[in-house]
Image: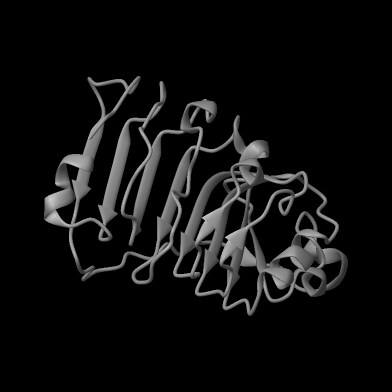
Length: 201
């Protein structure tokens, strides 16, 4: 394991190289979705982002975007093509969807503090797809179970200037160096590696 530039006094790094995954922790956003029409503000119009759901939590004044069971990346692209009254969101959750890639430009001008990508058959995230998040992303989590050909989901980690926490689970057979001046916690379950590859973890 090579970790460079991480604040060693506070970093918690757990790496598991294994063949099987036995548990999955899912993130569930809390809050209240809004009804159709103008009452959707500050969320987009409900019908414009269907099947995704915008959740506005008035007490914390935060916006979350939850997307589940999308049939294709084109559906996600149409969602982000809607009119969003605000660009800043706290959480983006993509779960149980058929989205093998996150392409460049899909998020338009939106940016997030936390990103959870769970069980989406997600093989590739274009590094430039996350450019808007360099100054906003604090948490990044990817969870996949089986398959092959997955690329490392977060390149150029040092460009995410306030990234504090990452969690990556999946059939990865290699990983990039965790170069970061802000990262304090990394939880990695790389079940594409065998115990003989442990030195590469």
